[in-house]
Image 1 (spheres, helix red, strand yellow):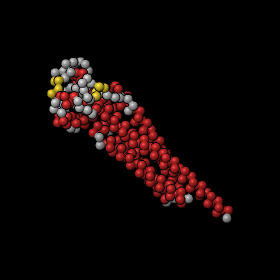
Image 2 (cartoon, helix red, strand yellow):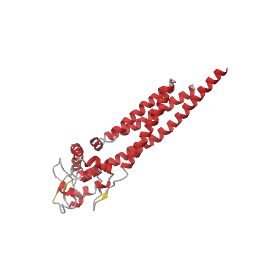
Image 3 (tube, one colour):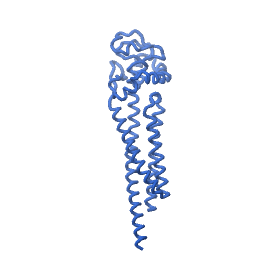
Image 4 (cartoon, one colour):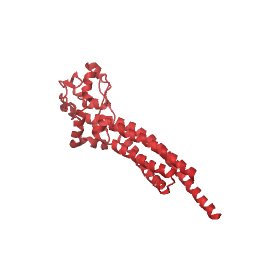
Amino acid sequence: MALSNNVIGAINFVAMLLSIPIIGAGIWLANQPDNSCVKILQWPVIVLGVLILVVAIAGFIGGFWRIPWLLIAYLVGMLILIILLACLVVFIYMVTIRGSGHLAPSRAYLEYHLEDFSGWLQRRVRSSYKWERIKVCLSSTEMCAQLNQSYTMAIDFFNAHLTPIESGCCKPPTECGYTFVNPTNWISPINNIADPDCIQWNNDQTQLCYNCNSCKAGLLANLKEEWRKADIILLITLIALICVYLIGCCAFRNAKTEDIFRRYKQGYT
């Protein structure tokens, strides 16, 4: 039984290590400017990673110090957390399965439409109350101002590969026909009714296109890219956790079998 318990302890040490990429993914999301403004996914990921760490520590202690009730609590708790992690992985995939950019004429960057994204993501930004808070957060960053330093000529800007949020929030939609002055200053629209966002554009550096649906769509496109990267990490970790959990279950069963056999031999002798 001692050998099996040591195996269980070692397995749970591996589970402790596997909590690190989950916590790391949450911290990485929290440090992204757009995610820090929206504050949706990072905390559930971090909390789930911390819970997996705590349960793995409990299993580690129970394995090395031979505390059966702690091992049982570990097996039950880890099973619940694995199910929760699997649900989170599937949820992230489902809400990010829709939404992609559209080519703009004579432009290297893509433009985004809010209706292309999943309904759940759209509801995160459609509320005027929620968007006002997000807008203030986005406008406080140097995201758009940095474009003025990087691109002074129209041709350079039109050939730039902007991020979705830069494309949506820092400039008017291409179909409005605005004339380029600099990346955040546009004048003389040709077709102001081509898109409702055309009349939302404002050269005020605190306004720009932050009231546009294209900005909301660009934000969601950015979130989609980052959430997909985090989801890959979570999926790989989930598979590893399932393998570790199954090995732990086998080791726990062997330990119980050895214990029963040992007691039988003692009773027989």
